[in-house]
Length: 193
Image (cartoon, rainbow, N blue to C red; front, top):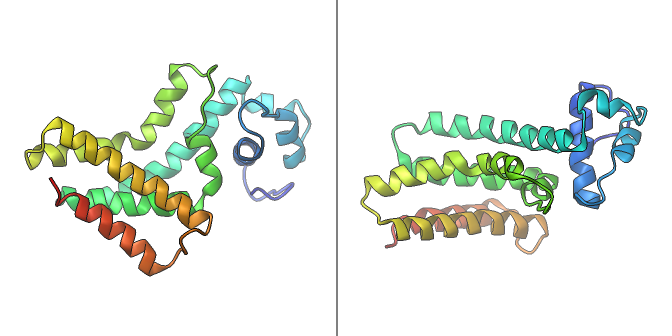
């Protein structure tokens, strides 16, 4: 994803982007700071000037993705501030786009490592926290019981991740018609009991 020695971005961001690619290519267990440094054209010690440990590097990667997603999500929430249902549908639409446009982020979003502590779980959980809050408020406003709310959350998130994966791997062509079909399915879910 990152071009070797791309000097247009600050070094810290280049390292984070190369780290995302490293996780995507080799996973968390085989993550190599040395390979990240090589891709960025810096010494093996340079990443440690920005991230004191591998754990700090992972935290910076998760925070980078969270920041990008939160910026996009906040725009949607502001645009549809008086319509909770529209917010939910449009946040879902934007999240699918976010995942399709950044398929390498999925490796980080879905990463699991038994050595990660609750800090990482919490950081990754922030990706969906705002959306879950909007869903809870919407469900409460229309009188949905908690078990229905949980089912809605599961189904909508499944549709988002499933659609992004199917678009990315070519199983379903990423066309406006297919994208609209997914968004319509998410929207219709809020009409069902």
